[in-house]
Length: 187
Figure (cartoon, rainbow, N blue to C red):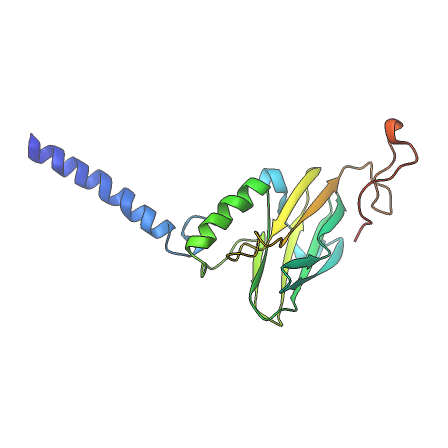
């Protein structure tokens, strides 16, 4: 009986342990690639369906310029991300919770490669792109998850407005806020 128990545990524990090693090996394609909640942040966009292009600069002051965007629900945005710094930077779209979880993983495995449609790593002086379709209203976060960058303030937000946004991308005043507009201009 003791031998059968040991064999059972061996066949149960080893595959689980190997799966953990494969996950932590540093490549998102090992199963982490669907780590974002697509329902919460939208879905990969089709390049042929881009509504507009947004240029974002990533720099070594650990900032995105701009760091706050307003888009309309249903828009497909092509983010063109220029790294004007001298070190690698990332652009990762997700919920704040997802970004923080991924950031902790990146601190353990800083050379992790990304193959996800909601993120890109950009080398110094290079340009990367993310095409994203924003399907639901709300706030979506983005950040650089390279170790130390997110903590230093390299993060931003995309405010996805419902059809209540005007053609200028600003919120239409509600009854309780008539005449007072919020948010940043549409970029």
